[in-house]
Amino acid sequence: MPIGRRRLVAGAFLASAGLPAVTPAAAQGQAVRLVLPFPPGNQVDIVARRLADSLRQAWGAPVIVENRPGAAGALALSHVARAAPDGLTLLASSLSPLVVTPAVNRSLPYDPKRDFAPIALLGFNDVVLVGGPRLPANSLADLAAWMRTRAEPLPYASIGIGTLGHLAMELVGTRAGLRLQHVPYNGSAQAYTDLFRGDVALMADGMPQAMAQVRAGRLKALAVFATRRSTFAPDLPTLGESGLPGLDGIEVTGWSGLLAPAGTPPALVARLSADVQDAMAEPAMQSYLHAQGLQSYPRHRPEDVTRFMAAELAKWRDVARAAGVTVGP
Image (cartoon, rainbow, N blue to C red):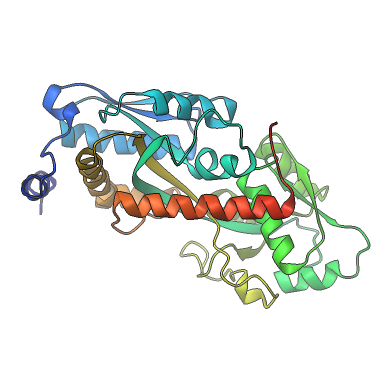
């Protein structure tokens, strides 16, 4: 069915179900702003701009991507939390400011549960455990056996204290009984450089970035942080397939989502969710996501996103508490 016809049918269905047939933006010609806590060029930024193009056509109204980086995402999230709940100011963010940073920092100027109304999940990428080229192990089981011969903990890199890569490695170390030493960096460039030359031994990073270095022969891929193998690296075993105790059931993904300020009417949230998921399901968008190393989520409801985010926040709070990771006062 052509895109225009499909949206007319969807609009009629939603109207009959008691949902607004159009968003306030489309009805009034006002601009919708997608606020991001990252600078231009970030993966979430790239997807948000493509989504904005689709929504612009669907709504017949301007959809503007607004980058507000700073304070580990707090500037953007605080701005959206204070915005009017009218569907005209939305947040497009990765999981870090929404569930990872709140897991390690209790003094943020926003509350991810209280201040936002989740709309939809935009996409996810798998997280990969990689090792340096001189690491004397080609699998996680080999790594564990080799580590038992070492007197010192094995150093691993992350892009900062309290980041997803940091907590993911602490989760594996705690569950499998691996003695690891965290070496935080201010960004991925120097972390990768030191990993290439053996100053650190391991790192957990997103599939697109990590596998690009593996395919170039600069790193070794040891496992994917998932309960199923990745479509982007089907030969790479999961953590659970390593045979090490405690690693079954671990699922770590880098995901992003779209949220509105708390208090946005449920019918409007449902309308926004339907339109966003229509845009994400378009074949051109699916091809674009795949080219970025991303996958989209099956159809879901806003309340599914709320439950998912609550579970993610609880998971990372448990990991941070077990590892003694805190940031801020």
